[in-house]
Length: 549
Ligand SMILES: NC(=O)C1=CN([C@@H]2O[C@H](COP(=O)(O)OP(=O)(O)OC[C@H]3O[C@@H](n4cnc5c(N)ncnc54)[C@H](OP(=O)(O)O)[C@@H]3O)[C@@H](O)[C@H]2O)C=CC1
Ligand SMILES: CC(=O)C(=O)O
Ligand SMILES: [Mg+2]
Image 1 (cartoon, rainbow, N blue to C red):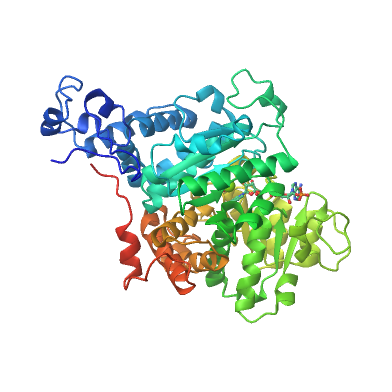
Image 2: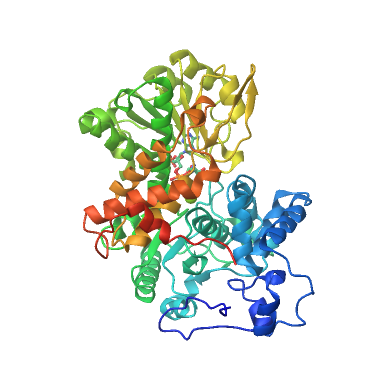
C-alpha cells in the first residue's frame, strides 16, 4: 500500500497528511472507502465507523441522497459539499451519471447557483483576487499549494445570459473545471478557478447583505487593463506554460483580452472560440440530415456578440474551405443585435461586427430579417428568452424543408425557444440544438432527442490536447479540428432521432479524440513542447485522470 500523496509542484515539499488531516483533504480523502490496512497505516483508526464501503457503494449512497432532495439548487449544494469532501468520489459520481449530474453542476443550475452564491456559499474554491489586491497578485498565486496547468478565469460581468453577477460568477470557473476533470480527465489538482473581482455594477448585489464580493462599482479603463495584465503576468510566472481560459467576460473585455494575449500566451476565449466549434459541428450534423453543403447555407444570428461573431468567423473559414471566397462566405452570415440587422453604414458599429455589416436596407426586427434574407439556419445567442416565437419558427419551416434552429443562449430561461416549440412549430422538421439541456420531445408518434450545442463538448478536449502537448498557443485551427472531430463522433442513430451531437456518456471518448486532433495541430504547427508521439490518441488517453481510489 502506498500512502496517498499530492502531486505538488517540484518546489513544494511533498505533502502526505495522516489522520484527521487526511480525512479533511478532499484530493486524498476516501472517507468510509479507506481499507482496513489504510486505516492502520494512516492513523485513521477511530475517526471512521467500522464499515468499509466500496467506491461503488459510496457512489450509490450519494445518488440516493441526491435524488431525495427537493430542488436542483439543493442538489447543487450537496454536490459541491461532496466535491469539497472527496474529489475522487465526486468525479466518479459525475462521470458515471453525466446525463443526470451535468445539468446540476453546469447550465442551467449553475446559473441559479451564481445568482444565489452569497446565500449558499460554504467553502471557498479556487482564488478570489480583488481589485484591492493590486500589486500583490504574485503573492496570492504563491499561496496556491498546487501546480496549476489550467486556469479558468472570469470577472463575472457576463455570467451565462444573466448579466453582471460580480464575484458570484465564481460558480462558472468552478463548474467549467469540474467538466474538464470529468469529461477530459484533467487532474483536479491541476485545475485552478480564478475570480478577478473588480467590483460589480449590479445594484441588487451591491445592496445584498450576503454578497461575497467587493462592494464597489467595477474598475474600468487603464486600471482594469493593468489589473488583468498583472494577473496574466503573475499566473504565467507562477505556473509556466499554464493554459488560461477566459470565460464569461463582457464582450468589450473579451475581444480585447483575447487579441491582446492570444499570440503570446497559451490562452483562448471559450465563449468566442469554444462556442464557435460546437456550433459548427452542429451545422455539419444538420447538413448530414438535410443533404446540404455548408457553402450554400445562409446563417442569420440573433445576437452579434462573442458567441455570434465567434461562430460566424469559424463558419466563414469552413465555407472558404469548401471553395467560397472570403467575401462570398461573409455575405452568407448575417448578424442582428439590440438595434436590428447589422448593416453597412450603421453608426457606431463595434469592431467585431464590421465584417458582417453588409449592404442592405435597415431591418429592425428578427422576423422581417428572416423574411427578407431567407436564412437556412438561425442561431440564437442573444440571451433573449423566447425570441424564436412560433411565427419565427413557422416562417423558417415555410422557407426550408429542414430548417436549422439553434437556441444556444443559457440558462434555460434565456433559450430562444424550447425544444418542444422548435419541433411543434416546424411540424417536427427543425434540426435543433439547445445551449441548455431539454428532455426528449414526443410529437406525432416520433421521439426527438435534442442535444446541447454547448461549448462543453469542445473545451475539455481542446484543453486536454493543449495541456498534453504543452502547446505554446491555442489556435483557431485547433478549434476547426475540434469541430470536425466532434461532428465525426455523431452516429447515424444519433441523427435518426434528431441528435446533432453524440450522447453525453460518450464524452470522455469524444474529448480524447478532440484532444488527439488538437495535439496533431500543435505538433504540425511547431507549437508543442516535445516530439510527436506515434500514437496521438494513446498519448492523450494516457494523460487522462480516472477518478478511482
Ligand atoms: N451554448 C453555448 O455554448 C454558449 C452560449 N452562450 C450564450 O449566448 C448568449 C450571449 O452570449 P455572448 O455572445 O457572449 O454575449 P454578448 O454580450 O457578447 O452578446 C450578446 C448579443 O446579443 C445582442 N442582443 C441583445 N438584445 C438583443 C435583442 N433584443 N435582439 C437581438 N440581439 C440582441 C447584443 O446586442 P448589442 O451588441 O447591440 O449589445 C449582443 O450583440 C448568453 O446567453 C450565453 O449564455 C455563450 C457562449 C456559449
Ligand atoms: C456555455 C457558456 O459558456 C455560456 O453560456 O457562457
Ligand atoms: Mg461562457
